[in-house]
Length: 416
Ligand code: ASP
Ligand code: MG
Image (cartoon, rainbow, N blue to C red; front, side, top):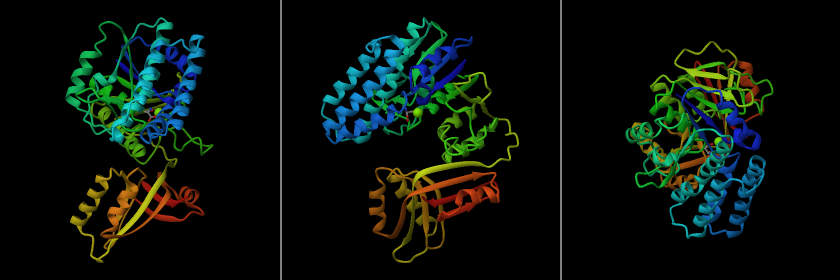
């Protein structure tokens, strides 16, 4: 059996949605179709959550109208009438009912409850569209089978239970095709959770692992994994083949194509991952598998933006030995900061990380024992297969806050 995942960009308009049945109709094998929210809906849902929790009714209402209009336009094109998808209307009503209630004080819990409607609405529309196209399939609410803990916004999978429930549910007894949502999970008490932004690749991998898929395909709006983001480099090239490890490294350092957690479950069972273009489905795309990567000498550039770079040193001018390092890392973890790169010396510790809601609290906390210096709006550039001209190209006229060079990789934290 196969897993096909369609992301937001592949469903940003009615043509994108029409593409899905076209791509899946030739598949003879059992198939699970995993969908994320349409277009940029998740960003909009994040703003709705924020407005809801701040009790900013005006923004809330405007954003909600925007989300409804965006989906209604797609629905109108697909069904000839903007009320043509009953399932969507039902989900939207649930969302409105939720937003009319008073919020609890738990931000991340409310976030997952509300943001999950992005995927619930998109799968509702696709469900109704598959019916219209006379496809034989079943819709599964992923929250009933992908079981997680209650770390909202970054939930951890309960593998044993999830595998058991997935195998029971996706049994292909009644139909050859299942439709389900990416990104979402459910706690043991059936509360909604999410797996972290862009997490629906990971969902596809979890399904692939649990159901022993022959392969998993992520359908994207690019021809495959590229050596650089084609939006920034006109001469970006497609990489035909990558090993799991190489792909893990690239995604960890910020390559947007694949969610970093995606590869491990697949690697554990040697399930190949294809990254293909939904615009040209017959083209080969990129295959990520256990075979060693073909030699690809062109530099691979990965840029992570919106980085914070902080350097701290103990106020009592003491050294930073191992136990102090553990203490520092524990503080970062406490504030749910994901460190992308770090460096230590006798008196200093530096880290580059994604800005999050807790960054200011982290600084406040650190300031009691350390001198703290930081830059916001930094960029982390990783160049694999680097050469002098690649480094020159990326760092020219920029202030370098930190650099690390290994045999295969050069990393720079730059001021933007
Ligand atoms: N819709 C979610 C997001 O935009 C998950 C995903 O697209 O993978 O983050
Ligand atoms: Mg997405």
